[in-house]
Image (spheres, rainbow, N blue to C red):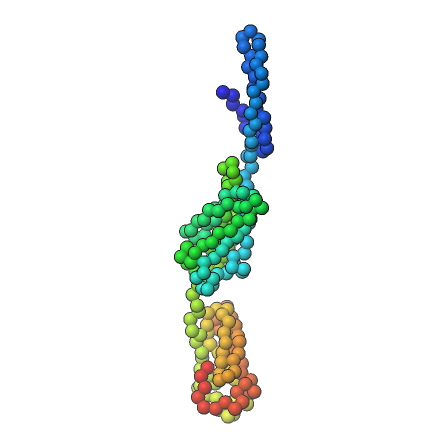
Length: 212
């Protein structure tokens, strides 16, 4: 048995081992040899591509499950973790890999990190690559509409000036506010407040009870 120190071992590639024997009379044997492959470098962290195009998973996308794709060292074994679920796949000869998490494997709503590690054929495991993705699979609650024109009555004197409709909704939500056949698209602010302005021409000819 011969022990080689770590400093004497090549970092990577193929190295030949040779040996010969000499007996007590000084006779030397023929050379014996064996080629050994070395790979002491761990793979780099896998790269995870954008998930669901924008790293934000909504109800429709979650119901269908999500596909996670990325790149790693060619032919490496890649372990991908999302919440409590883990998938193991093999990168192809170009380093590309893909896996799917079913709807029942997805984490609760919120922001979470997807992580992936690569292990090469020699058992060297590299650092994890991560990507942050948000899950929001619950629709917003019904918006609240405040009293219109202080008393929910728009008089002949008020209509020519137009009026505003205000209320609250989920923060940053997009809303469509409709009166009759007229609709206004608005966005709630970070506190959930929104305002839709109806011009005189929007309400011209309206009369009777109208739902907002």
